[in-house]
Picture 1: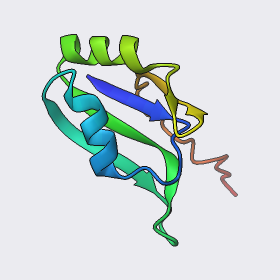
Picture 2: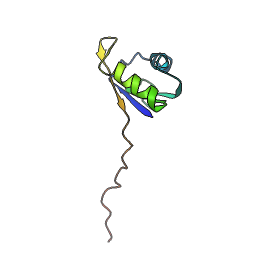
Picture 3: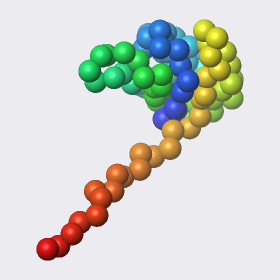
Picture 4: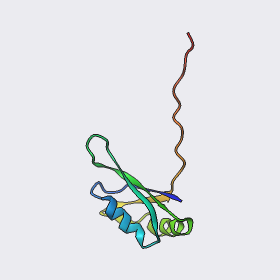
Length: 90
């Protein structure tokens, strides 16, 4: 299951995010989303874990405080396709 982790402090690293979730089970992947140009964290990331471990992590960590920020932890929604805009036929 893919987990969305939002409202993260900009100082959080992938290692810190990974260690936060390790206590709930084996992590398949951990990705902190960064700005393409500056390399700075955008304040959110994704964790992939087994369903049972992910449910436990979501219940335990959603709404907790991390460096004075209340983090949001929930099941990731599938990425929506972007519409290509309106096509005109001339």
